[in-house]
Structure formats: structure tokens, C-alpha cells
Image 1: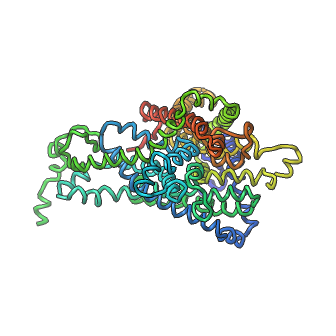
Image 2 (image 1 turned 135 degrees about the horizontal axis):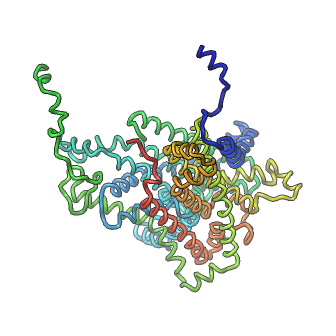
Image 3 (image 1 turned 120 degrees about the vertical axis):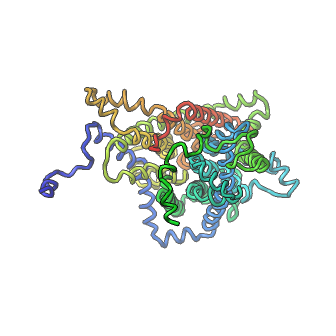
Length: 287
Length: 314
């Protein structure tokens, strides 16, 4: 009988609620999302489908584009990896220790989020230029050129990615149960062993999430990189810059091709982050 | 042997007296320079080294780019600094930046409220997909975000010929800049509100409605006050990004001086013209905005941290 009743009940999209306003709010959300985000992105995908896989492959294997893509991905990977090490260090020190200036440093972690990328770009370029505050001593003492080389891109991307690691790791360190470390210590484990066996394992998921976020952001980053990179073709051109270059040459197919590859990468990164978080929830019971 | 184990009365373990005495309510794991004997901390020397390494790294990589902006901006004195900011092109750029933010931020604020209301207060299938889609602009490169609008509205674009026939210009004009800015700042307000409103549930709204309040009155007197700090937080971050966006805006603007240059674009132009002082003067203005944003953000987290965070079950 209940089955028959269930069949008689009309299907509803939402579960009934006394709260008003679902239809207009939901409708507005969908329309606005569709117009601002989904339709333009679909236009890109539609354009790319005109190229076909052959066309995409041809764009991606064009020597200058291939060099740009490999520059973007390898340096972004390296920057995100360096950020993992120093981000973990900063997150640990800022959460666990109390020292003068801690609050200031903690607030400053978000600087790369707040500082407009073009501002970061020109100031990094000025800092590391051969006559800059850091560039001059680096060049004279070590003979290292940072600005207008691939090293410059690395420095800019380290700057951009750092807050992602610190801000994903910090809450997990804060949530640690003190008993675990105490138990390990009373059982005779050295502090180093406690770090490797008790502290690090639960930090692995947030570190991975932070790495993926920093990596994805670094690949797409434009403003803070182009001023310090020098933008030498085949050497220090990043993929987003190549989109701009293609657009300036009215090569819409080329720009679309590079953008599609980067968009596909964004989706992959998003998927990876969701999988890491699902895995960590399953393993640890929280994110 | 199992007999002896079983012989121990289970109450011993559960009895409150059997447990260690309640410890000082410690902030989780915090140590100071002076309190040294804690099994949950590193040796003083290690700790000192870690703190020093953090301070050195953060100063070199995070703080110095910020400080240098001001050093460069004031390197030729205050007079030149203010002169650079009162140039007609600079003033036009500042005006355009304010205009773009004044459109983009309220637009995303209204969207954030609508999205949070429908997602957090009602249940429907496909909710997590919708949340993922709302967050999508954060994972798209700003340059790609600009490009999609060029592909839609540019001369070669989907609506290009139609727009040209009706003498409308979106790309390489202010509307394109506004659209690109709305795109890159899209999720800021929504993502602050949705988790918070989900945690707050619908009980208070239901109470207001049963007491006879209208839907709108319920929203303005119950829902909005409950999320005001999170809303402000989202608006703050949204505004900072809207005023500072470079990549997306750079692609759609066409760099027409005095017409389609926002402050970050003007910074680029001046810098490429080797007019470093003027570039850094505008950059210092933007860096000050970042400083104010960070200051207000820290203040909000400090004063209203509880109202910002979701109320966790544990």
C-alpha cells in the first residue's frame, strides 16, 4: 500500500519546507552561474571542439607552446614542493610556538592572497633585478641571476603558493590530540620519531591538498610571474603568457588550444583535491 | 592469565579518581620561549632554529616584496609620489578600478546571498555539484577567464558580429572588464556564507515564520544578522581581488589609456615604460589596500572568529 501511496505522491525537487523563497533564489543562482561562469566556459569548450583532438595536439606540440607548457608545469611543481616544506615549517612554528612577532607573521601569510599580482610582480622583479636589493648581492657573491630567468619564475611561484599549504595544514595541527604525542614520548620515542610516526601521518592529507592547490594556482598564475620571468621564448615563457601572445597575434585557435589544456588541468586538479579530501575523511573522520 | 585480567574490576578504569589529575587547561601544544620541559615540544635549540628559519624564510619571501613596494614608491620623495598619483591617467585608472569594484562586489554579494539561501536552507539533489560549480572560477587561470569573454564577445567571437551590428562593445571596453572581474571574484561571498548557513540550520527562521513574520522580515531580522560577519569577511576578500585583478582584466581590456586601464594595468604600463617611480606609487596604493584588507580580516577573525566559523559538532 505504501508503494502505491508513494507512486501517487507527486515528485518534488526539494523536500517540503516552511521557508519561502526557494524558487526565486535557486533560479537566480542558476541563471547567474550559467551566464557568468558556465556559458563562457562552454564557449571555450565549443571552440576547442572545433579544433578537434588533432588540432589540440598540433597546438600543444608546437615547439614554443610545448616549451611554455613544460616550463609552467615543471616550475609550478617545484615551487609547490618547496612550499610544502616551508609551509609545513611555518604552519608548525606559527601554531605551536609563541614568540614576539608571531601574530604579525601569521597575518602576513595571507599577503600573497591580498596583494594584487601585478604589484607582487613588479616588486619581485625590482628585488631580484641585477641591481636590486637581493639581485645585486646574489649576482656578486654567487654569480646567480634570478630575475629574467627560470629561477625568477620559481621565486614568484613560491610566493604565490605558500599560503595554500600553511592555511590547509594549520587547522589540523591545532586539532591534534595532545595525548598522542604524550603517549609516544612516555613510551620512549625520540622527538624525531614522534614527528615521523605521530605528527606527520595525519598531516599528509592536508599537505597533499595544499600541494594540489598551490600547484594548480601556480600553473594558472600570470601577473606575479610575467614581470620577473623575462619572457624569453623557449626558455622563460609560461603557458598563460602564451595565450596572451596568441591573442595578440589574432591566433584564436592557438589561444583556445592552450586554454583548453589548462582548463582540463584545472578540472583534474579539482578532482584530485576532492579525492584527497574524501580519502582523508574516510581515514581520519575529518578533513 | 586471562582470569587475572578479567579479575580486575572494570570500574577502576572508569572511576574518575583513577585518572590522572586534571591538567592545567593548556592551549593546545603551545610553548613559550621560557617554558621548556614539555614532552610535546622540541628541544630549546631545535625550537629556536625552527623559529629563526621561519622568520628568515617569511621575511625573505613574503615580507620583502611587500616592503619594497613602499621603498621604491618613496625613493624619490613624497612630492614625486603624490605627483604620480595625481596624473590624469592615474586618476582615471583609480576611478575605473573603483567603478568596477562598485559593480562586481554588489553583484556577487547578491548572488552569494541567493546561492546560500537556496543551498543552505533547502535540500535538493545535486547540491554538492552546484557548490563545486560555484567554486570553479577559483581553479580557472585568470588569463583563461579573460579569454572566454574574448571568445564570446570579441570581433571573432560568437556574438561578435551581432554586437558590431548593434554598435555595442563589451570586450576592450568597461563591460568586459566588469564581466571578467565578476568571474574571478565569483565564489568569494558564496563560499563564506554557504557552510555557515548550512550549520546554522533553519530552526530560527522557522520560529520567526511561525510567530507570523513574513519571509522577507525573517530574512532581514533573523538570517542576515546571523551571517553579517561572514558576509563582511567575504565582501572584504571579494573587494580586494576585484580591485587587484590583473590577468583576466588584462586580456579583455585592450589597454586603452585613460579609458580601459584599471590600477593594476596602469602599473604594468608605467613599469614597461621604465617609469618605475610612478608604477610603484600606484602599486603602493594597491599594497595599502592589501594591508587594510589583511588588517580588517585579522580583526574580524580575532573579534568574531566564532561567528565566522562553522559550529562543529565536536
